[in-house]
Length: 217
Image: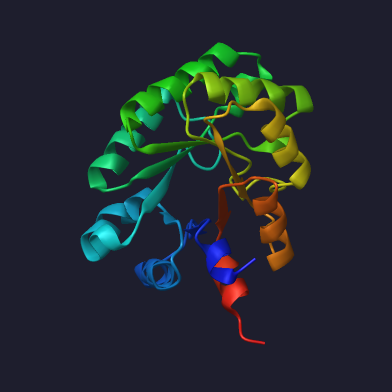
């Protein structure tokens, strides 16, 4: 698999709490140079990035991140502001507590609410697989599909574990045909990138992928 063909699937990511404007500029410059699918950045940097790069970049951000237990009204306000500032893709974290309490209707309604706000823009739903049982994962595949989201995403990258091939295979068997898959966390080698893409992932979230894939031996 050609390096450029891998990078075009990467959401080039910088979400550390202490990331500086210089860090964000470096990320964006790399994304433009190598043709990443998007940059995934903190909401507080969206407006500056949009003003600096304009149409050169596809801007992704996170909502309810990384724990997911914000109330829906807060996630909705975050989403609305992010879109107003120039984000084109939203990666939301579900309320895992609602999953564990069996409140699946509430989880679905929250996704519906945020997708309605996104309209034709992309909504990715982070389910944080490391905290879920197999049955919960299957149930969430159906919920994400029924709610009309664009992607199901494995992980925040801030949980106890990241993406696994097994979870991607499970997603593939249980999501609807209109839902795409994003892996994040633990994708640490060219072999990993190729494996996840070969299993059908459309996007891979990574902070180090471009550096890894373009490193000169």
